[in-house]
Image (cartoon, rainbow, N blue to C red; front, side, top):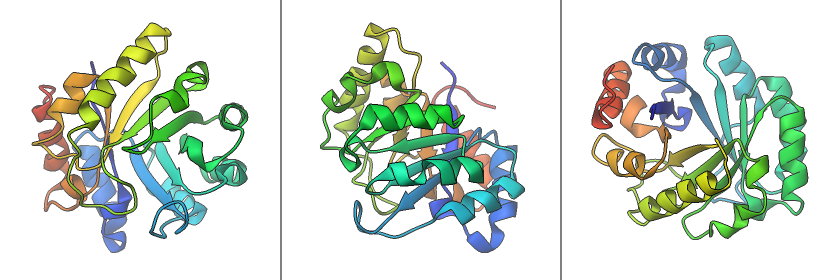
Length: 221
């Protein structure tokens, strides 16, 4: 199974963003991850569509957007127009989950759902066929630099079994506390895409940091 690394700009030095993105890409990063928070669904306030438009000018990598906001349906068109490739939201944040997933796909983006540590897999079971990505949060969202919650590993294993039982080729992404020391367990459990903020942009050499993550999964570049 291929390992995909999606460095999170939440941990980047925005004054050196172009340089850091180029280094991460040189190291083999496949996506760029953007956390969007509204200060209501999670206790923090971060980026919006203007950053997506800026990133689209700085890198050719797909932009993977995770919306930790209430009523994410209001942002589908805006983020599609800004250049997002992946649009992931939380099922608890909206009423008509399947409708929003379908709309995301209609706008040409991959449709994803995110589950917080306490959110059960049952929240996605009825819409597996509408998913291109399932994001398992391995920390409680809102802030970077947290430690990986070990219970996420079993949840990833069960998520992979659910997708396989339904014939789904959806990506399983993991976000939270991913380092060279923690990535192996979720990868072995069935995850293929990893959001890494501090572990990439918090290092002096982001390119080598990405390579280190891949080596930890046995897929050195």
